[in-house]
Length: 612
Ligand SMILES: [Zn+2]
Image 1 (cartoon, helix red, strand yellow):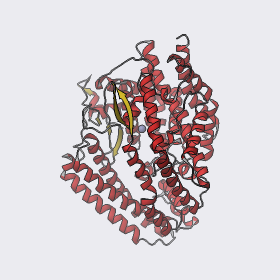
Image 2 (cartoon, rainbow, N blue to C red; image 1 turned 30 degrees about the vertical axis):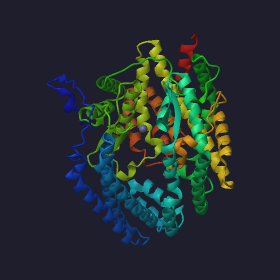
Image 3 (cartoon, rainbow, N blue to C red; image 1 turned 45 degrees about the vertical axis):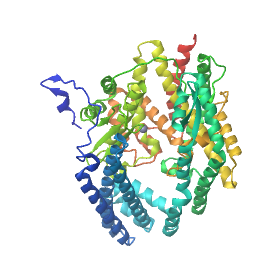
Image 4 (cartoon, rainbow, N blue to C red; image 1 turned 90 degrees about the horizontal axis):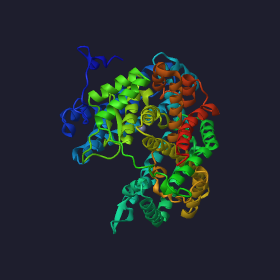
């Protein structure tokens, strides 16, 4: 890891460079979506995938140690194809993000999607082959020198395939899923795109899209928030019966498949995807529930500061104060570098490298996609970060967050590709960690008390979202699925379930709730990943636990941190925590410490606002 020195010193003095806020994509494939290099690369990728598929289908395993060689060869081809596919997908994703009107990029994207589908089918067939070995032979194969390192992921694939129905039945399910399952998710997206929320602006009624309306919930003017919320609830109410039907069918399909496979617990699949035990999840929620009072204290104080008896749902994102702190891209970058350096040299050097080599697209210009991401291009062992930087403190946090993701990939760059596929609950470890370094520093460096409160409040709002809002989603979704097992659940009943979950998760502290939240939240309609909620909270607290450890151990912690990141995709989370943090995630201690960090912020906020 010596990539940086050549940049830092020149003639014995430290070089200060002005960073570009436009990324460099040409080093991957010259010429954007019309690149000939890319065209050639896609042909190679296709050949690789088709070759892999043919080999998988031609393989007849003999349930003997002699199969090791075949398996090795297949895994080698698999890695090659997966890397190429990832590389192409990431590059085209960058093209689409930087210019949403790049038509050529859309057709390239469709090409990569269809190659991905072929690849997935071949992977399914390979997993099935793995189930044909008996346990003894499998153990022998996994103990071999060449495959030892991959034994966790391979055994996991084998177990998952064994847990499913026969190859033919699973193939039939996949076919039926297109129109009977995923289609409900797509229908939801289509319906949402047509929903309009009426809103009066400058005496004139305008129609807001769902996204535009949602942004108004963080408006400092309460009347604006209340008015939007009224229109918002009404708009979802109008569609509630159709959306309830959609949710019922989507859940019904999923439950039927689970039933056929003999899976009783609806959490079985999401827990297995996130490589965690149920007791870990239960312990996490138990600790959070025990500390709800402090969060309620915060919400009550916030209400008081806003001159209210109690907060309503539409006040939860209301900003505290009106302080506007802006930092140029250069200032933001230097602030991040400086504070990363306090944690560790490698993170700081890596970050400098990313800024100088134009890994980041941050320019504020029209035609870019909304949001932000970090993507990895394995053939070059480089990442690219996308966002729109306009100078707010939250932009600086986002930038740090995405750099955290990039550092995670960098830490894993020489880990076997099959061992790099980390689950959602640990995917946010490095990003949340990096964001914490920067947001903590921002609070500490605030120019006055007012600014400090604004920044602190921003941090706490995030905690409220992760420990209360996500908790409500989890309570709702588990209960809804239990009721759905018994039959169709009406829109009114779904509203009731949501209201109960929200009251419980928010400790009964709000004036008005949002029973139609289930209709407005995409996450309940996502078909690719079930239960898209608890991994957020897990990831946040897991990362805070590591952050607490880093603060205890100081600069020397970085090596241990990197070692942890490298193992994030090749063991269960309980084992990861035991190995690298010497803690037991099924016990409360770890979670107590992590939650404590959030509560400390609240204590500070309560103290500072005591006399206001
Ligand atoms: Zn992230």
